[in-house]
Image (cartoon, rainbow, N blue to C red; front, side, top):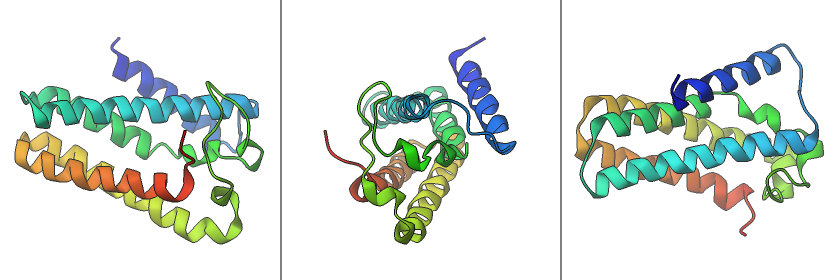
Length: 156
């Protein structure tokens, strides 16, 4: 069983539990899980960046893009319960208080929707093997990540 299958299985378990209306785990567990997912996406972004800036390997790009897409569509937002705005998972959470304000919901939905859209497009473009198109889409995906970071993530 490869790493992608293990992560997909873990995400599927989490999604199934969340779909059943259960928010599983203590606040620190939820923070840890979402931090793990974000670190996995950052690692995958790094894999794509290495390929578009160096020797291009279509299979590596597809794997990384598919992993980002899976996490982007995992309904991970359920791990942002109001009691997880502060606390520690692997490290102190960096989510800004604005994330949890009712007046931020529309902006949050827009940002999250934009990220999912670009992640889905990244997986489609990666499948073509066109390095130039992947590089262009990677820029769009990076901008979608940055939109959330700028608005809802504290700097270290």
